[in-house]
Image 1 (cartoon, one colour):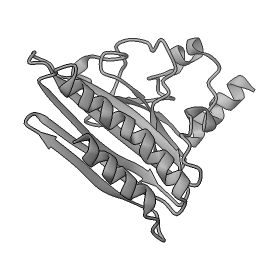
Image 2 (tube, helix red, strand yellow):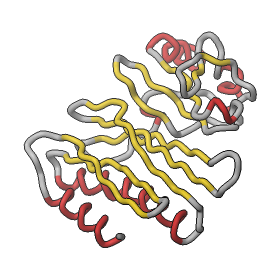
Image 3 (cartoon, rainbow, N blue to C red):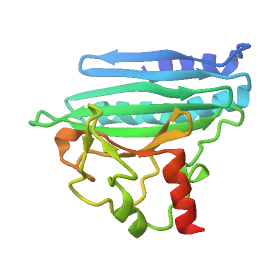
Length: 207
């Protein structure tokens, strides 16, 4: 199976279409379901860099299944935003050990399609400190939403500035927190909104 994935990655990295696009890659076993993006760009080196990074998450999920012996493992993805230069993807991993509540984890991956580099959230916003963010996150200025897109009040103040995020366009993006980090597990992935107005507010606070 690993050879199959590496072969797909090699094909993805060698073929350079005239337009950038994303195709689904899939791998399956009895209780293993992996769905991941194969990103094609006009630049071969950037394309290889992006897909090699994504491959590390795929291999991690396979290790959970074959080496760490989780009963069920599932990996899915969603392309949240894409333009000529940037692609924003959320990877979701579900691990089930047979207990009452499977474990979820969400990665927000934002790539520069020209270079293949990951773009850190600090490219879009500067937050003064974790203490400052703890006071602001989940307020009226920086609203928080659960996986059903219901606005929620945070159960716990964030202890750190998350590096996971995704873009949605029009100057709006969302910082990701994992289940139980800032709210109850039933709320699953928490998305805290950044928009041009509250980003300007942070600039004035930290100027």
